[in-house]
Length: 310
Image (cartoon, rainbow, N blue to C red; front, side, top):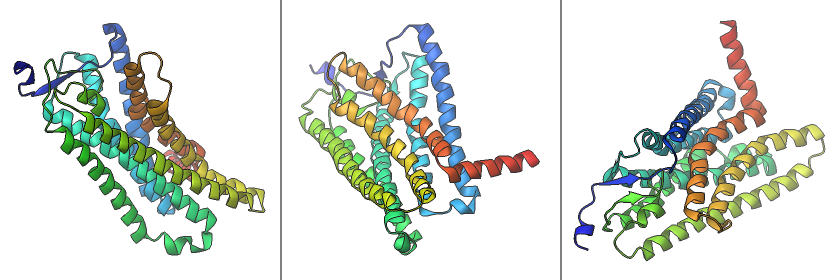
């Protein structure tokens, strides 16, 4: 047992147990999705920066969400692509711990920004006369800094509990990136406290924030139904529909992963759900905001029109 608990310097990510031909196909497909993710979220950031009409609290928070999406993809996808090309290439212990820390930080931060964005829409639609007085730039910056800070601090708790654990050989992790539960399975010590903290963390970033979002949108729906003109209702709903779609994607994946059906190969199910969460969600979010948000579409048309004229 002493030999099995020697100092671990690297881990081997098993990734997807597929044939080399399928892995090469996935490498090309995932590379394309990764490029779309960076371009799509980069375009959202660029449009918000270029158009002064988008310099509002709503789009300020959207720009932070785009940053989180880019960071999500950059944290997990490059390592996954390396594993598809070179299945035997390991990841260092420090790199694995950093990947866990960043993934959890971005997950918590995205969750908090979704809550902040729902509160912003609640203030804009339910209290329009007081909106500009309440949602000042000082308040917006404070909310953004608080969201990032809480996200980092929550992930630090998991990292502090994880680092002292001894790890067993062989150090093979059945995942395409260093996911915390998969890493805990190769520890040579009691991980009960770690698993409880992961569960508590998952519940705290799912139940509380989702409840806040649902309450906000129930109030928003009541306020929209009280608007007399159909045009006013459509405009109010259009500013919320894209955010609701993103919330549905984020929480839908998370809820299925934690409280979904327990039949079949559970490890493989969670692996593919996390793939959707870390690759497809960040790629789909800018598409949702650009296709369902009239202001973003109009800004995109103006930018393309200028480029066409040139």
